[in-house]
Image 1 (cartoon, one colour):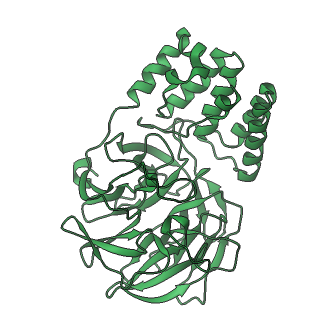
Image 2: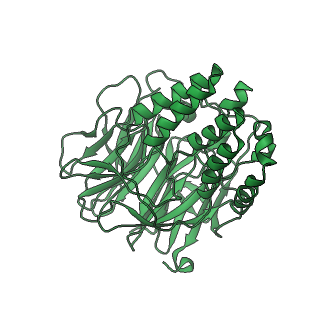
Image 3: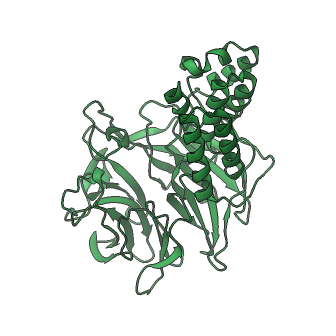
Length: 432
């Protein structure tokens, strides 16, 4: 019973989100994690009342955390409170989440309650497929593709490979080496500054990259690459730390580069002509910063914290604030992000079920989300999507990255053969 109480799935769904009551409380990630851990510990010891109390406090800090909502439902069900569990499951379903509630013995009394029928119907609707992207690459080899960048000047799509330690260009549905030679570290996020003839890439010696040299394990760099030649011009290293992981990169219109460290929670800037990486966000402020996007005037930076959602950073005042969201929207587990020409923010969520590609319309000051639509979800070959880029007439995204082929220690799994898939969703078809 106790192991059943602790099992949980972070998931998200497929509904169309419209404006509602917004929230913009300051999110204390450290406090949230502490309360959640205390709730898990209390559940493990059988003290369901204390567990429910700690999780209730955690939910007040982070009300859209999908895994926490499902855990609250499980605690309520374990305590014999079916109506309360249904309230949590209803909220879970309203986010567009999917989960096989009926298959879980812990919810046996919940699924037979008459109040569960509307929730079951919503969960069923949430499984509908959304979007019709066209695959432009399918490859069965283990590459672990991560970052995408569209070079409009060269009319080419570049993609990074963590496993192969290199960058490819897509040519006639195949991968052609672009960065020469291959590096000793895996290549993660990519960002292009066409005006400056630069491609910026995050590189890491991670377990998934196959790093075996102890000197490379945990080492990370921001690579400055000449876009016109593919030649590495410089390697920008962060201050020393026991372990680092540069994952995502973004470039502003003025040439400023941002890079996020998903391990320490830090975010760095590299100014044009600067002598090195400049700290923007210190360690621990974010749980796991991922994708980023600069405003057209380079004054604002949006950043996704994988564990807490979307944040707005004013680069002039250094103010950091969570972006206000309408009811029924969660941006937990957001990874790659990109802005399209109409000002919309596109993003992928990959730690949710189902994985999805989303389009957000923001307020003019980027303080809130006006509307959000799911553009692709519940599709075949759509597991753990990662990077995305805006092409000439389509949204390009890594629909299936192959992260599912690795275990928690970063070792390849013998039982998974996921195909790497990159797809395009025509903007004209969307009327955008």
